[in-house]
Image (cartoon, rainbow, N blue to C red; front, side, top):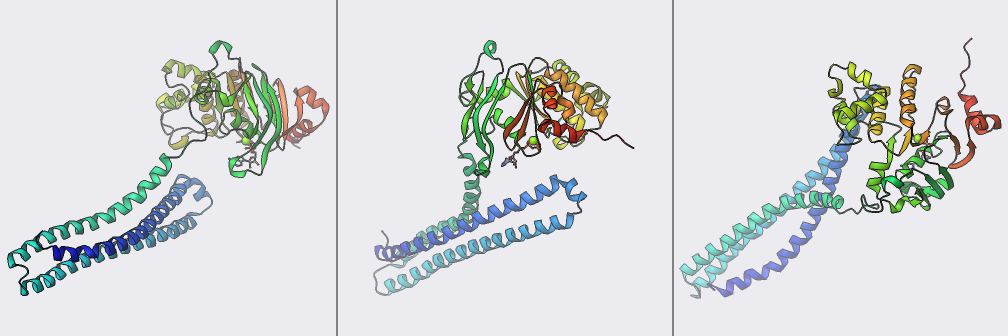
Length: 428
Ligand SMILES: Nc1ncnc2c1ncn2[C@@H]1O[C@H](COP(=O)(O)OP(=O)(O)OP(=O)(O)O)[C@@H](O)[C@H]1O
Ligand SMILES: [Mg+2]
């Protein structure tokens, strides 16, 4: 209102400024995203090296890991420097423009004054008003730098938050306690891991695991044994065919109920959490009392060694259980699974060669664990599964032999040759 003439000229510049600002802002945002991703990569390298420090040390790879980290850190530095320069130039440009506007106002105002179209008071008032606006815009451009960084970091977070799980965690049928038997069946199952679609791990796979029986799966490494267990746990969905529990396709069952109530898993590499032993065992059933935890530990042959620790059940196990031996970790993992009292026990025997003494202890623990349940045991040591009700020999994702230990030994086929390979040659 003070001077429509000058306002008009000032406003003329706005579209150009908005256009330039948008293009430049877009560039800065993409640089910021790249810088953010690079920092993520750098942190991952450091994280991996530090958490696997024993492996790094054992292979004397400290220098290489440091170089790897340096290379990633330098990239992150360059990207962040570029971003800093970009933001700097953006702010410089904005300030130059805004101050330029003051100059133009003074110049125009001087001209209008000399032609008596504007009074000195009006010019002062116009200057004051336009400077207030200019300062506010200057502040905004400073803010812009923080916004660019924030948006890039936020978009990474929202990417994860907006991810839709391919498999819901809850929802589906639940079999009532009385009807739950624990019969598992694979019907013509074909499966390939999503990351390796063209390599079928199981092809037209059929298997019946009757309730209350122990079924052992044997076969050379990489033949799909652990995959069978992962599919029962429904970590992945099968490509074709179906897996059923008591006649119900497990895809129609509530996954959380299935994992919490029906299945107990002792995996090939038992993973513990960096807390106390009692909390690690209670992980199997969060509501369990101290007494129940102790009972489970006794069943798993773990009570004695736990009691021998100065702090007993409150002993902290360290990150992922580093302060325990392999056999101790396994027995805690067994106790954890037993506390659940699962209908079906899935047991992926660790390959880690325990000495004969501890193997016997773990073996006894497992014998206790098997009572009254459906058990699927993946055996690497054939000596441990001779009592299994059914032994299945897997080769390249297909069953090549099936029967009891006696039947298969008599047959002199795959199983026989596997046991033959594992027989110890007497010394001397
Ligand atoms: N997450 C995965 N993504 C892609 N391929 C995988 C994955 N896990 C396993 N595989 C592949 O699937 C095949 C079967 O693996 P699986 O772990 O079932 O073998 P396994 O019989 O348990 O072997 P081992 O006796 O060594 O434990 C292998 O060829 C393996 O490379
Ligand atoms: Mg395996």
